[in-house]
Length: 207
Image 1 (tube, rainbow, N blue to C red):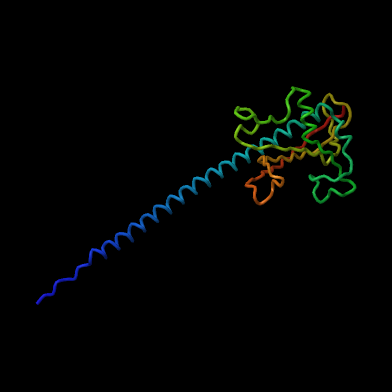
Image 2 (tube, rainbow, N blue to C red):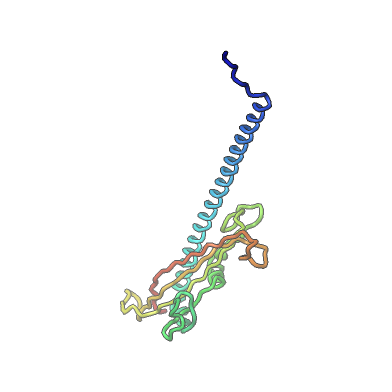
């Protein structure tokens, strides 16, 4: 006699269905969390890339402003280069022959304001499209230009009397988010500062 095959009870079928539903729901939830996290990381990477490009532009702006100011005043700045600690000179900053003069952002702001009535950077105004870093950037910029490695070129320039000088400019720019914390670098502050360094050689004619 052929025995009939045993049939699963409806209770067992319901249990299997619940397990499958839970597994599918968990899988869909995991995919959703991964997608949201992936989009968040992409937005963050784009923001960092934008901040890096802004810092590069700020270093170029600081270098250009310093070249314009030095070109207008000639040896006014090179005469101020004395033996002093200077970040651009690195480990040689303490050497007797190490000379440096630092042009701070305030000096550049004074020069640009005198020339065209504008500071080096424009602050953002809430609700408007103004500001050097955009209305929603919530960032500020810092730039310093150091003059180092002064030496005579021993090359006569047409129409220039005297020996011109060769000087190295090192522009150090940083773009940092504005934080209300007393410690902007603390663990509780989700910020990132981008720093760029740019170097240029200029010829300073004696004036």
